Image 1 (cartoon, rainbow, N blue to C red):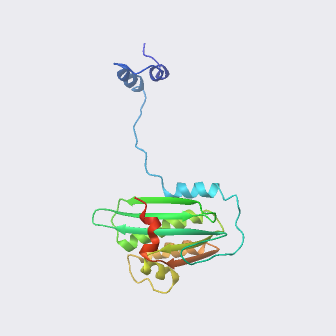
Image 2 (cartoon, rainbow, N blue to C red):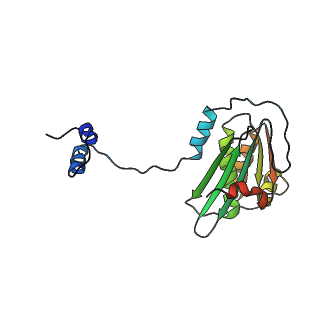
Image 3 (cartoon, helix red, strand yellow):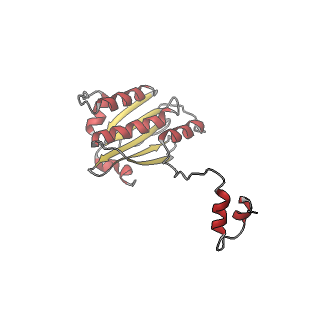
Length: 193
């Protein structure tokens, strides 16, 4: 008679125990599936279901050397692409200076500007689920920031879909400001892998 799964697992694994476990589990149709990466939506859902205890009130904001106060969320973003890989780095900072770091590697090819737009879309998607949020977005891509500010027109066929999605998400916020910062001021995203 075969031992139950509980008995096999409870015993110390000695020679032959792995075979017994394999035999006991063989009656089931089990298939190993590796854990996939956590998607941005899961993080957005978590943040949406765990709102800030401090509420969102007031209007004070200071845009100087990248400093936010009161009820503004701050987002720093960066994206890059090489011939072998592409990815983004996003840092979200709550009004009370709590930070969440996101570093994502893509399994598709894209340009540097597409990667930067991907970072904005992912970050804004997470913040979007917080509802009634005010956001300051900082990035070192002058092109992307100025396109979202309306200073530059988006003329690229490859960037137009990203621009459209980012603009749509931006409209859902009570207040949003896109600010270009130098690469040296965007070091918070450089610290991520």
